[in-house]
Amino acid sequence: MSDAKEEELNLNEGGEAAADGEKGADPKKGKGFDLKALLPNILKFAAIGLAALIFIVTVAVITFNIMSTGGKPPPAITDPTNAYMGKRPIYAWYNLIGPVTTRTRDPNVTVTVEVQIGYDDLNGNAAAASNINAYQVEMRDWVRRYFSSKTAADLLPENELRLKNEIRERLNTEILDTTKARQIMFTRFDVMEL
Image 1 (cartoon, one colour):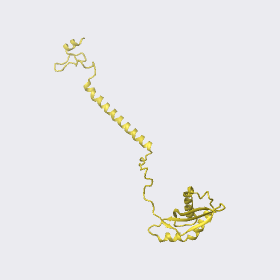
Image 2 (tube, rainbow, N blue to C red):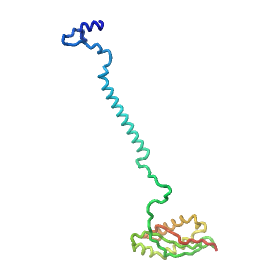
Image 3 (cartoon, rainbow, N blue to C red):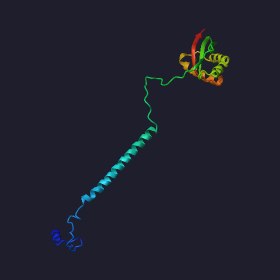
Image 4 (cartoon, helix red, strand yellow):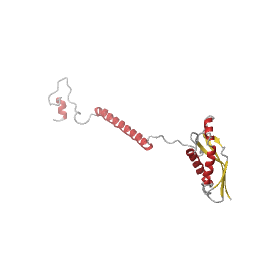
């Protein structure tokens, strides 16, 4: 039957006549989608999808940042013009070794050196000063033997830092026990050819 005849007869879906109080079948029903009922579901799934996308991107960015820095904070930016940052330690200085003059391994070359030893003296600790003073004769003899074992090439100005470090390490291991040398300075360093 045609639509117009169904409307006139007021038939329901089963083909039976509708009761007087019942309305007839909706002519639009079954012919398409009801957008009013479908729109909330579409919006709900779109919102869930958008939330999932935001969550995944956030997790990916955080994971990438942790993996690229190894979990460490970025290094602090320092001023390259300021070569030394922080407070330099203040040492007590032992200068009783005096000047030492000796020949080097080279014939006709002598060296005169005066070594100053910087050590930790926390609040004027008398024990540190007396400990280092107890080794005065041994240190003077050790300095003489040390420079007599060197050649003139070993005593060039460009090797001075290496000499200071070596003297400090060897004094600490071979002579000094409780008080340790922290820094070595030369107040006199003369290499002369005879």
